[in-house]
Image 1 (cartoon, rainbow, N blue to C red):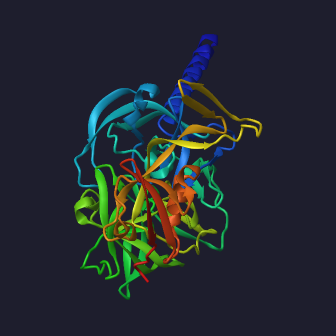
Image 2 (image 1 turned 180 degrees about the vertical axis):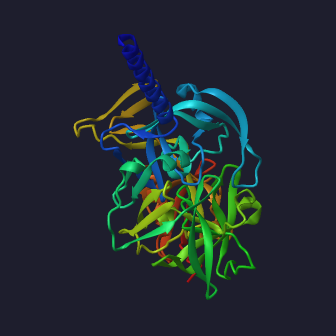
Length: 451
């Protein structure tokens, strides 16, 4: 009897060990939160309607774009980040996205450790992309090393508080919904691991139901794919413009406005809409029922709860809801491209400091300690809309912008500079630029094409 007793005890111990290891193995396949509350808050930066969050990859702290429109995380490898991350188990593949360029070469890597706040995943797949053109930092004025999306959303309930710029990640089993009178809850549909939502637009005096990709990685408000059979087409008040970058190159199309856009009871008026040229979105139209995308300039007007496991999204209006939809009225797209030397006053120099000089053979050298030379960001015109106020004034792609309305560009953030181009129609803009070693000044007025 004693022998039988110890055999049963050993068997139970073995079963317990197997269960623990299998549970650990299972947990490695998804994000788990390492605290008792099974929930964690993370601060993010909101730049040009895009969410930038801190992500730790294989022990290296990086900044990632939170993008509901991507399946697997992407690392931009133009700075050979993969060497620092020590990514392994790789194979070469090719990725296709928006734009009419060729597919992009990437390394697919397995078994990477991803950490977002206290949420961790031990065997995350990622793609390292080598194309130097896929670099968001110059356009945002902030370093972005990669993109993360579906794998985080599918494992956790993700609350995005755009007002407070905080994300809360919660284990689905631990999440408790609160009663809210002023929120709307909508069903999500999924195609290729991407979330879709049903909405309505009023254009050309017609209400049109649309199925939209929820794309938190896009800074625009709304993209619609033109379809005459559904009545989705741009109005006469539109202009052709650069719309953004995709994996396979730049995207161009028409910008306009729709009279109303609705998500159940929530209605937004005079919403910015872009109609991408069909030659740039062939990859996006593989989902035949898709009519476009809902992006950051609409999403930021709500505090949002993404619950992929229950396939629902909850929206609550926030302080941005009634904000007027503006757009860039100058025709200029700026980017941070390299640095330039700037002579500026040294605030650490005391009033008693004087100029020092020496004279030899009739040549006098003076050193003025009140000033110093510093490396500052160089902001360059990288896109210029045809027939825009800036183009008509004589500005060119490649011009380095030194000041806007007498404000030195090196003293401001890129987004602060760009915001000047979003002001009301008639606002006068004075630009001092450097072109081929010469400093030139240009003046123009912002022009609203939709008035």
